[in-house]
Length: 251
Image 1 (cartoon, helix red, strand yellow):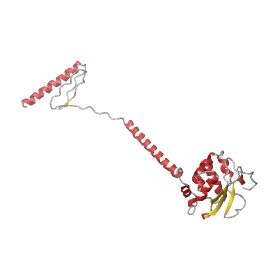
Image 2 (image 1 turned 135 degrees about the vertical axis):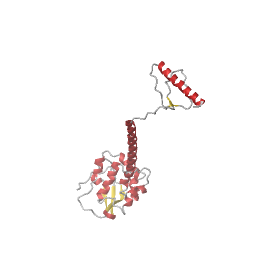
Image 3 (image 1 turned 90 degrees about the vertical axis):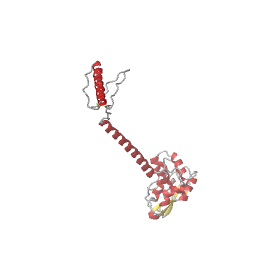
């Protein structure tokens, strides 16, 4: 062993003696001799200077405590629940907008394309002439513009609105809905069918004939049989307001 190594070993021995001395002063048991090459630091006290570490040695790092397994499991579950909730909200919003689209900002022509404008190739209108008119009353009661205006031919939508004093069919449905006092009575005032024979492929159905209840009468509608045995509203005229007492009829 050369003099440099001998001096280093002597300093290490002195450092070990110092550690045991400080621990004995604090009432602790002297620490056992550490492994070669590793020196553990004694507890520090306010105002005291840490001992000098001999060359070639290092302090043992304190092991970092890990989070409990149950806490890590709970964190993963919470994240999964949050992601699932966000997915449900986004999917629900998309489905609602898909099946119940907002008609705000749409023109009468666009509304027609969602209703009467596509009856040529699709079976979307009623196969009963009286049900076609009753659907308008039901749409007004529920404030559903496409279902109400879409039962009419494009040009009749505007005439229907103007006859009743509104700018267009969309505004008419919204404003008429405000006047409905009983949705069920109003929608059911117009029958879906009558027992008498249908007079032809085009005829007029009078609202006043059936005594509309729960809201405003909407006038007389001309209905016409079109493709796929469907009935489209092709005309509208006003009737007296209020309607005269209805005449007896079979429903």
